[in-house]
Length: 398
Image (cartoon, rainbow, N blue to C red; front, side):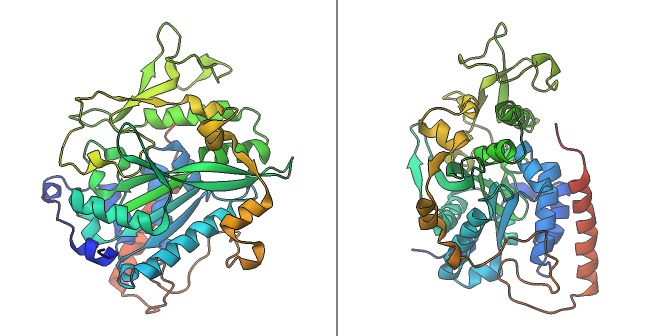
């Protein structure tokens, strides 16, 4: 089996990018992300700032602005250390994310970013798909085939209910992003610097707000945020949106699901009059590494028609996957310990606030390097970081 490094070297250059250059937001973020002198904490600022301003997912915007993401980064220096190192690092980071998310003050999402100039400028073909699948296998093993095509990869995230003292496990679904998506029909799945994987738990975020922050309308809040995310989808100048909201038909939704909103008239204009149960898309939002991103097409495959996609799961359910996604399934402490290890084995305490590194280090490797970086590189990084911090302070796309 080929290694991560071998698969990275097998990638093909994206000649299409020569006439379709990356926009300024991607270039600014990459001044930090792809600069070998950048520190891990600086890269995290660049990632969070970019997500807060330039990614359509409203939940991602909220998480980026509230330190709600656990960010794991690997770059070419890490890849050169071999797959066993990568596997140990990624599994350890995933476990720390889960440990830090138990108590209502944790992080609802896990973001793995793989940074490489070669990957950033790679063509999205089968070579990139093999690379992405290989990285996924290093840290995520649970997946299932979907009858509509592709597969769905998932994991579990835990939250303690302070009222019952029980732990609840929430199903989290893995998603894929890449620089190559920028400007293509799947533009909403772009990410600066290479590729990225996300585990995001809407259920964990929603119940945190309900159980710890006393939000009395969690389903309404979550549905509103989900609909706003779809309404933010990129309008491609040729192919239109990859996902889109549906209009209510004579005031009724596609599915017979109770309206979650107390007052439809107070909804933002983006989602007023829209279906709260169903939306459509040319890719399935629950799929992991989607084959249609790598099949050489420059436009979505419309032969089969659009997917019918679901909002109604947000209301939860008595059992089944909807309950796993939104309400969480109660488990005892022994079950959690089997996944996360007992507290005696935990290695890292959750930081109270972002920690400033004192020396430039390799992203994720923790290996100290030269203390003083070249003045020219320092200026580039700091100028880009100033812009990224402005993004973090900007208004959300609501």
